[in-house]
Amino acid sequence: MTPGMWTVSIAFTLVAVVALALNLIPAYRTARATTLGKSVGLAVPAELSGALAARLTRRSLITWLGSLLGLAAAVGAVHLGVVTSSGEPSNASDIWLIAGGIVIGIAAGAVVNALAFKSVIPTGERFARSGAVAVNDYLAPIDLVGSRVAVIIGALTLLAWTIIATGPTFTVGTITIMLAICSLAFFEFATRRILERGQPVASPAELAWDDALRAMSMRSTATAPMCLGIWGTLAVCIDLARNATSDAAFTTAVAAGVVVFVAIFIAAAVSIATKPQQHYLRRLWPDIARTPKAA
Amino acid sequence: MLTIDPKSHVPPFEQLRLQLREQVKTGELAAGTKLPTVRRLAEDLGIAPNTVARAYRELEADGFIETHGRNGTLVSAQGDASEQQGQIAARAYADRIRTLGIDSDVALAWVAKALVP
Image (cartoon, rainbow over all chains, first blue to last red; front, side, top):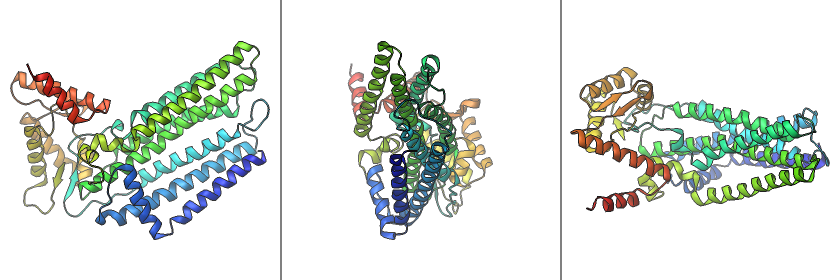
């Protein structure tokens, strides 16, 4: 690993440690619930604030720890030479794998947190939704379809590399795409498991918040295949351009990389404009969606 | 939304049956709407799966819901044949509008305009 990659890894570790330490401050825990409420379009009722702060703290601890474990695994793989970069300057593309380890760790942490949460059956009145829910009630098309499309594009790029490249089969780029395929399979499995879990609640507001947290967990899980698919595609496109044996091959590889890059910006713009973090609200709580923070 | 009050003198299966029946009759649960699985609804409401299964059975016997094997339990269309077809078309329209992310007030205005002869 280059000194630059060590710097990135150490900087992320410090950020994670600070984020974990912030959970010890009660005022921060309360403020986070309020800030999150604004993001997901829900108010924080007084009777829920304590339980909500505790759930968010637990989620924060597990996802940050997951990200650190993912980072450690990626750094270990790169440092021990399990994976190798292709072309010169070597090791520059290690960043894809390191960032990939972090997003996989966050996704795994979010799923562990969602599945391990033991909900308590209220002693008084209980509420439930009359209709069944599906994954697309929680994930906007930009997340649900985007993650699958990113992995399909990555798989096609991997196929192109396998057929035409003269470099090694296992590079940071190809391994990132393989991880994207695995994380998509994990995403498909995990989102359904999260969906199957019951939601015993004592009020509609509690159910709305539980939906919001479910949507967050599913979005964290969708981020891994999406990011890894895009990063892997870009990394392999760069490797294809470096190893190109003709001008036409070089131009094709560069053009493919530019197309992916432009697609990322378009997807980011659509994501910001459509607020996918409030998709669940529009689908499951249309009345609240029309008058945000009224829950 | 369904509510179960464990302290009520009305048995939980009856509370559930009455609420679901009312929601189907008022159109709050439109024809074709998929209901939660027995196990899932029992878990949500903190009651025994048999209680939910009994409520579903009775609603099915009364023609309010229908079971489609692996496709789950769906709300039946109510009224005569033409009303039933209308309800199914409305459900399909509502699903499409939700998929497209269009505001329901806008969608309702389009329907109102389209219904004007």
